[in-house]
Length: 122
Image 1: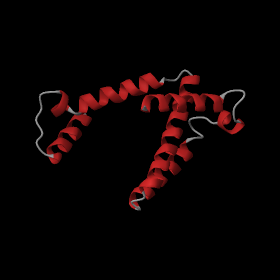
Image 2: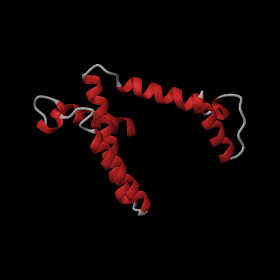
Image 3: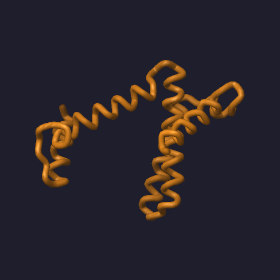
Image 4: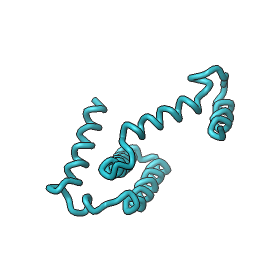
């Protein structure tokens, strides 16, 4: 079950950041992880370009780890929580997909994209 696997990932990250965890992981900040995030995004891009789905799976996992690590740090520093990140994402998706969750109509991908861009400007 994906939610159980996600919970396990969060527990692993929490342990890595704990006093009994990894000194390197404990030392990280949101700012210090920026380079890691950029590197992982590049590796995801390269896997997609190479049509290497095995590597893509691994690189997406690395990207997810880095993202969740940044959220863990934000929670520790009382900046924001995972719940807030998820709620913001949910709100944004609903607000921008007015042809799915509202009264707008989009019959083609192009119409949907145009409405997305219009809604994004709001």
